[in-house]
Length: 344
Length: 110
Picture (cartoon, rainbow over the protein chains, first blue to last red):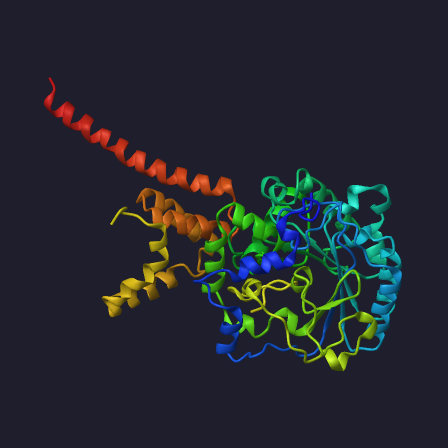
């Protein structure tokens, strides 16, 4: 069940920010950025429009920063999708990144993907894999993705059932393997097919991800030998200390150590290239954010930038000031973290 | 000094350079070089370190290399097998001296 349905205090994002900012020993992220010359941090154009088409999901993962789940009913309407398409036509944005929840559960999803791909831009879908086998109506997803040349990015936190299921729910690993085989069958992840299947690794606990290339090597070996599965690249992503993962950190007594680990691993090179500098995030209701994490903390792009996709004007957003807070340490730790994996 | 071991002391390891900078710096340079990827991967090195941590029974090292092994993608079975390797060597090292005991016994028994 989502935090929202539980009436959990963290369903209110301000309560999350209160916790993140109530720490005497942890330095301020904004101060760390000021020291390295980002005062303030600003965007440097928009390459990626990341569109969250809804919080509805067939899974309720323990670390989910969206607090997504079957009980979340917030989904993007076709009208808002049309506003997104209008904005894309009037921009030099190169990549459309569709996320959720399980974006496929939005009834307008198939229409939207066809419209998005017709714009001639790169289209990514963040597919949780299990949706493909969740219901017969979704079995056609691999073929649909292939026909539209969509790049598929899927979470698989580990190559064993125990750790995957511990984070994503009972039976998720087995279903994910079945879905990966279906994607492989239509050509995804196969050499020279041109159909890209990337996996996302994120730690199944209160520790940082290791070196991306080494994890990729290990995943390829285990998935190929164990299940005959092929994929292109592994993106290693750090868990952000917000929403359900923040709750997990506090409940498990790992919060302070985890924050210390993130702060001690602050990497100026990663900080200079954080994802939000080239990304604009759209919420299910059309409001604009610097990233998906700020979206879940309900921190819209700062005025005077237009705050809704219907008012999109790239020139007013290209160099906007970015809202930062303590959760941003998650993107700047170690090799850095973005929706496309490590940064440096 | 209420306890001989404090988990917070692990993060203060670097402070040993404060009282002997030259040797401390040399040690950490060497230490960091050892754990870089070489003929062995960083995951393999973390698992070796985890096993050795148990053999030398260092709580700081067990803390550090449990996290490091998980970060590098090791799974629970690999980590426990590494500990068994340490245990096997420790117990084997004791038991192999049984031969010495047998030799000595044969020497002095009728």
